[in-house]
Image 1 (cartoon, helix red, strand yellow):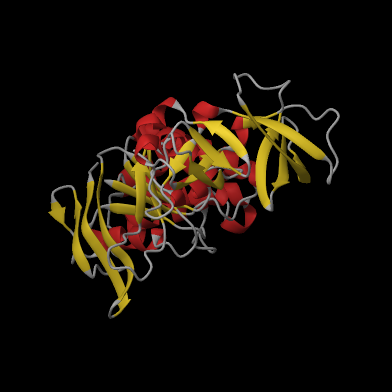
Image 2: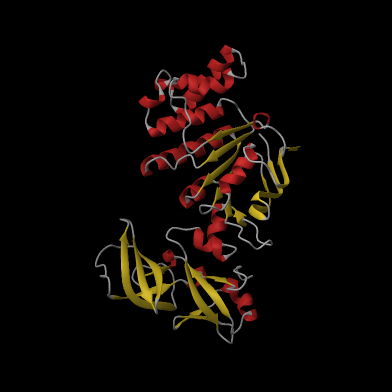
Length: 372
């Protein structure tokens, strides 16, 4: 096992055009780190730089205490699982798993031992004589995992390995990969655009976005545990990206006395955590963030509410255990949650829902940062 250090890491394919800019953070020994972000934010590029498949333009990349900027991929002691299974179709499951060990001239007895251990771990014993075409998608992905773990690498790298699987199988494989990582305690870097994968699998999450043209803006927006990211998003990008359905971000203003937030004609008391910040923002514009689960019907909520908001229903999304309701308030769409699917309103009908004051988030619209 090994830690990974990104020291002011940068990547440019064209002179003056950054894809990755000034990434600096550590991935701890034995940690499961998830890179998450929208398409084009550079998460796979960072992974490929760690793997040695992309060159580093600026900064240093360390695995353990070694600077690996110019080290060949085969010498980095990493194993990578790709989005495509990348299995050899003419080889059996056994040979696919064993291939990397065979080309390293490992003794046959040791190869057999490692393949058997991987097969036991991944439930592949019954399939060792089959070829990939005779396997399901989940079984093929497990073979790809087996090929990685037999090498006992210092670092596992996963590049969206579950995106080709159906929804039910993704849930199953999420759990399998998480259990495998806990058992092996191998440093793992996992790339995904799926927020559910990020929240349920990672010890910590690194939220990335395209760095844009501003030379002072990095791809990194926030790094922390799943609940730190969810409960205290550091900026508007993280707040709007993490969470399904996403957080409501509403144009608002702090009252002149600093005690309330005004938005769409609604007055909401400032929560305790933002009292001091609101005093510095008296009379100024802010962005009010509140998640849909903190907007609910009066007879269903389990919190004291001093604030309600009324609008016209636009769309209802029944999910079985709850219903997400999108309603229009002064030209803006707000999302809330109904816990019951009895007597649902129809599109176009008015609805009044209660807001949870202590669950608010406040951001500076100019800097896009959370008020401190």
